[in-house]
Image (tube, rainbow, N blue to C red):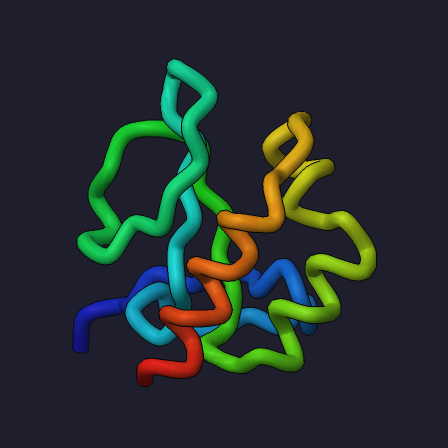
Length: 86
């Protein structure tokens, strides 16, 4: 049996399979985006596919700490849209 990669959610801090999480990536230019393929170059962070986890990550500014930059409300709104769509 193949071992599935595990990643930690930035909201609830639980370990889950990589394929079950949403990847947020910051590229070399400092642009933060949602990585649907899971293969984009750059620094990645993962979050569960639940609004509760996203809200926890926003409240604690966890994503801002990981990416060492201010994250615009527009990016958070895009994340909310991706989570609600699923």
